[in-house]
Length: 304
Figure 1 (spheres, one colour):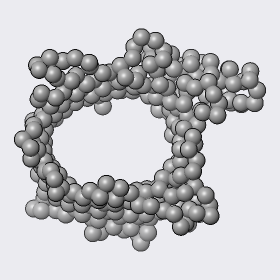
Figure 2 (cartoon, rainbow, N blue to C red; figure 1 turned 180 degrees about the vertical axis):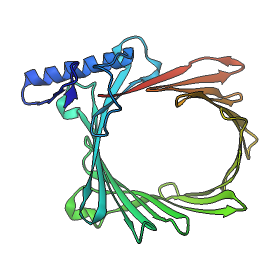
Figure 3 (cartoon, rainbow, N blue to C red; figure 1 turned 135 degrees about the horizontal axis):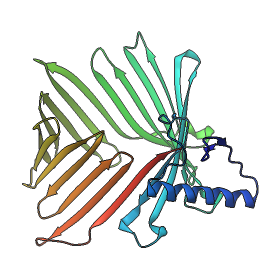
Figure 4 (cartoon, helix red, strand yellow; figure 1 turned 30 degrees about the vertical axis):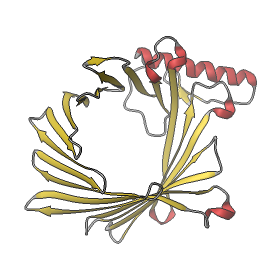
């Protein structure tokens, strides 16, 4: 269902070509309203998670016509299953296509449960690309709260029920171990990418207003030192083994709004600006002290 201008819920039923065209027009109207920042109805409290969420992206900096728009609708819901299993599920839809068979993009579901007085937790998420239904991607997360230990595993398997149990292939696995050191937070996160046979480790040291992050592999190492200057500003310089430098500046603008500017000398300047439902990403390539070929991506999330 979608909410009309009177605050009433209206069902969407797709059975005929006429209804198909009505749906396309409705989604187009919603897209235009969201770009303009116009509310579709009277003011109301934040929408529940069961309502669809519309995201609109201007891709590749294309502002010339509506072909640059890439609206998508995300809907999700949750419910409690027997044996205290939390189940969340959802679907991503393309709001731009005129082909109903191409509307669904991805469907997913996640089942989670806690054990032993909430000491242990386990969750599994399955994702399927609707346009390519021969494979299911999975993610498994496990945690031991008492020992501050977490495990995350990614992989895929054949979508056939007969082959699902015998065809899983793990593509990425990582552990995170945390502990306290005189009131400061330390984490060690070894990671292994099976597809590329690549292993690295991420270590962090969080001491009040300073966060040190070290990422090391056999071929490369880099260090990032993030310093909180005040409540609204943080600087994060990064240096790599090859001598390359970057500097990120995070500034809070209040009400969950923020700007992050990253300078990569002789390479690019990147800006991410979050303003309530709007997110803008701008990339300025740097070539011989000049900036050419800037790309802009703009997204707005709208909850019906």
